[in-house]
Image (cartoon, rainbow over all chains, first blue to last red; front, side):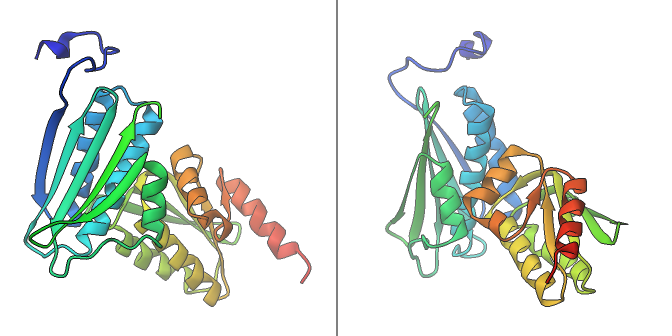
Length: 139
Length: 121
């Protein structure tokens, strides 16, 4: 990890492929603060501004909160961070008993879509529901 | 995990002031709501001070709106105080600031309260 010793202003850009960081945790709201902290740390690595980091913390929290509402207790929430040069794409997913797309007429969706650059939700196989959000530095 | 949220309560110039510290998300919003319900049930105006809140999301905003509604039903009111830009942005984004008057200082909220009390009608 020689990259870590480089000047802190140098983003991990210029590489051909993205780095992936995956966090798997119990689908319980008590762990949300841990995930917010991880998101902030990763966004800081990409040189996001403090405001952008704060937006991302809230966006990921909203996405997870929406999914936790339908997650089967005792299962896991999975979060994958894809770190590009100046773009972070986050996919959060849970297993639901009756998987459905998150409602878009809520406070939570308003906040999520305003703070993330782009947001989408998906129903996958095996009753998996995902929210994918992306935020670009300076964008 | 019981230290995420703390509420300190005091009285000032006829209003109850609840200073909240910690984070307000789906794991703590319900207990905050219940705590604040207890402070508005007597009908006195409540000012909730959010400057020491390190994180708030839509679950937290929902709790505040529920408290405002409950305060109104009991003849009281809810004001919010926050100078943190991120929290103010969230209140504005969701339109909650149209429902809960927001000021940067407790003094500002007390002044607003006095003005609404003095207003005719």
